[in-house]
Image (cartoon, rainbow, N blue to C red):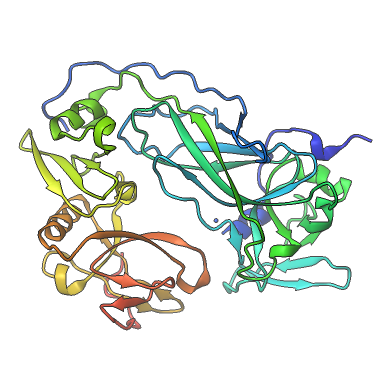
Length: 418
């Protein structure tokens, strides 16, 4: 019989049901012109660790140029389960050299979940009340032959190869069948308020079409049950970096020229470079959170030091017209910006303040003048609706986003939230 579990097909378009469930300038310049990017290599890449059941490749769809120091929000990586006898559930994905960790691969989804007498799981979606299921779902389940495209934005640096790190849980071996451990949606055609998760028959696998995504592992269905034996693999992914980038894309200075002016050399001290177009500022950050900045002021590049900025934090600074979301201590920053504090309507809101480029620079300067302040990146999960990264200065928050220091109780009505 034709074994559907081993075939390699292109990703199908996700159904509406699965999508609902996942609700996871000018200045002194160089004179060189823009160059051509090298063609991306799209071959499947194995981990050097032979036990890893996954292969990866850079998504080869047309993209904007990847310019060193400039945030790239269009980068995607395809992950595939290349085994014939294991099912794999992703736990997190991140670039080893930089970039944010991909969150929310395992946990509750919106809607009620019940188990019928046949051992099947029924998820009843509720579009009006944001209830959470009582069991934990896998949002990156890969059966043998399955593929899944993962959104992996980051700020490329000088090097062509970047290391992708994936943590995962695998079930199935020579003595245990993975089919006995897995429940998956009955099919992409099951549009409607209910979705059944069933054992993986040949008919169900055919409808799945080798598209990884939503599913259940019997061993991780309990809330908080991450699964035994979380493993990891590294993959060296070739990145098509612009070899001769247009310096105007990064304020008139390429990463090499800017780092030279700032004395921030990656080879010697491991600095990572980030250019923020709206701020007209280069940030160079060392592994110990020590930073050097170059800011374009009155057509001149002004150099300064800045302490306590974690690497990768600039990836969370506002891009384009977007603003930077951050938790700020009102006693410290209330005189220069309108600081938000926690508030509650139907759900708890941790009270993010949204800053434009100039406001963010003022906040960072004031932080730099205070030896007791630093910029933090923390993961919170307000209301249990999903984990998220958040920046903080002068605020200590718990894992739910509740303020511990300063201890501010949430208001019932927001103060001009943006």
